[in-house]
Amino acid sequence: MQIILLPHRLAKARTITVSTRHFALSAALALLLLAGLTVGLYWVTIRFVAELQVPYVQRLVLAAQKSENEDSRQVIRESLSGIAVRLGEIQARLTQLDAVGARLSTLANLRPQEYGFAQAPGLGGAAPTLTPQHSLTLNEFSLKLAELGQRMESRTDFLGVLESQMVEQTVREKLIPRMPPVNAPFKSSGFGHREDPFTGLWTMHEGIDFQASTGTAILAAAGGVVVFAGFHPQYGYLVEIDHGNDLSTRYAHSSKLLAKEGDVVQRGRKIAEVGSTGRSTGPHLHFEVRLKGVAQNPGQFLVSPNTTTLVARSAIHVPVARAQP
Image 1 (tube, rainbow, N blue to C red):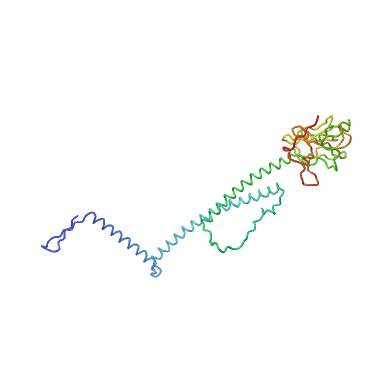
Image 2: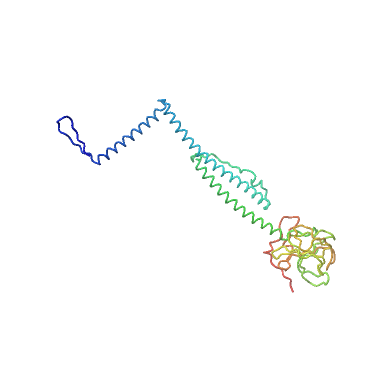
């Protein structure tokens, strides 16, 4: 572009050539000038708005501040809503943990109050003097809350598995003959070789004889299914209970049977009464424990009614006793 200047009449004309570069530089300077004026006006407005007392400007500033505050409050409300939901989940987890802890205490014969399942644990210690202290930010608090929730979920899953294992162990324990089958003051004959009361020969006695009067209650030593209840030529009136895992018990020489084949009995249920039927010299209970059909020493299983110490071992670890020829 060429610009021709004529200062006055008949004077020599002057020509100015404007290139693209000149246009670009001019536009850049104009933009810089406009930006500088805008920033300056904004600074002056913010700096002296309180002193100028211009109602329109003040309304603009207040509207901007109100919008910013509303945005901040909205962010805080959303954060608090998320935290409240997370706290509700943690509270539900805590309730579940308390219930699982109480059940585990019952299974393990522990008192829940000794382990603080129903109350908050005591905390304390000296105030820190060297390490700097600060309040948690909202982001830090959310991260701590999420970490706590993950740890609680992990602990809940672990306690659930532990509870299942303890319940299974408790059920198995109830199927092992621990309970004495009759309330008798002493045994008239133990397990092992003895002199046969009828033939006088040295023979194997495959059970324990409990001395008791006729009509004394005979109780199931463990839970199971009655597989035989009837008369046997040697045992007299006999009840045999299958406890699973190839383990069974026999209750012989009864005077009266109270259980029948197919009954599911629990430990401690009355299944018969003491008598002297079959090959017997007098009223007593002949009690046998058999593993895979082989007689075991009942004394390895039974628990003394006057003590909590187990005399028996698990049926899986009990050595099999075999009768000598």
